[in-house]
Amino acid sequence: MKSRICEMLNIEYPIFQGAMARISDASLAAAVSEAGGLGIIAGGTAPIDFVRNEVRKAKELTKKPFGVNIMLLSENADEIAKMVCEENVKVVTTGAGMPGKYMEMWKDHGIKVIPVVPSVAMAKRMERSGADAVVAEGTESGGHVGELTTMVLVPQVVDALSIPVIAAGGIGDGRGVAAAFLLGADAVQVGTRFLTAYECTVHENYKKKILNAKDIDTIVTGRPTGHPIRVLKNKLARQFKDLETAAAPIEEYEKLGIGALAKAVTGDVEYGSVMSGQIAAIVNKEQSCKDIILEMMTEAQSLLNKDWR
Ligand code: TUI
Image 1 (cartoon, protein in one colour):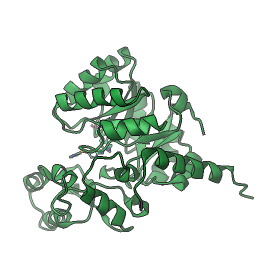
Image 2 (tube, rainbow, N blue to C red; image 1 turned 120 degrees about the vertical axis):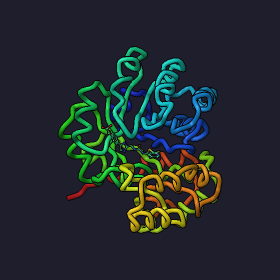
Image 3 (cartoon, rainbow, N blue to C red; image 1 turned 90 degrees about the horizontal axis):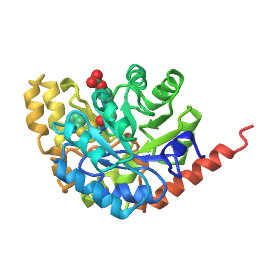
């Protein structure tokens, strides 16, 4: 299952580890890259020195390529955009906006640029502005989500673009990987499944909540803010839903949201924001990143090799 993405990025397996704000650090990203996938450090809203330090730590842990994700809504997106050039990062993914203004600088530094997009229109704009590939992310994903499902979005983006497409959203095992390839994707991006990896440093309570999740346990909160977020249901999610019912002003959402992800990743999974994809329900064990990747690839390969007549 070598694809043009593997050649482009010099990786062994077509599996990206999705950037998860406050969670995907050097430990997780380096473990995924070391196992042959593409590990990605999440910039999120973290201070620049923290992100730079994670990049340096990852370089100590692996000689293989890894990426940095820049959340474009973050106040320090400009600083992180420059830092990846200074630190010689090989791959940048972006979320929650258009990275156009950084494109020339990144290209000049030989960085592969792979924006995450929720629609065909956005995917086309990214290709026109010089992206090397796009991640087409369905609404099954955790965190900030669009409206379209992976099943519907991926084939349409594949048809509309000539650059490689990475499928994301709802992929957590080899069946999902095989399905994504049949939809025309060149690779997959997986977030939720890596939350329970040994090398993932998120709090045990967060991992337990993922391991115990059932099919209908995620919910999208904050739609009126224009930044809908998929999370596991808990007391905080119910408070957000109450705001919607009461047609509360946007400031009320902001107040409730401040510090919510930080709370969850340090163990308060009732009043914190436990971002998770819908696929959490099939995540039932803790494993090393290497075992996760090998299991997914072996299963996908045997499904794709099957004689379907
Ligand atoms: O970015 C994500 N997922 C995320 S970001 C995040 S942290 C966060 N915290 C508070 C509020 C918002 C986010 C948690 N999860 N996925 C990629 C993604 N990008 N999904 C949707 C988009 C997107 C949306 C609008 C990409 C481009 C875009 O462009 C709008 C424009 O024209 O600027």
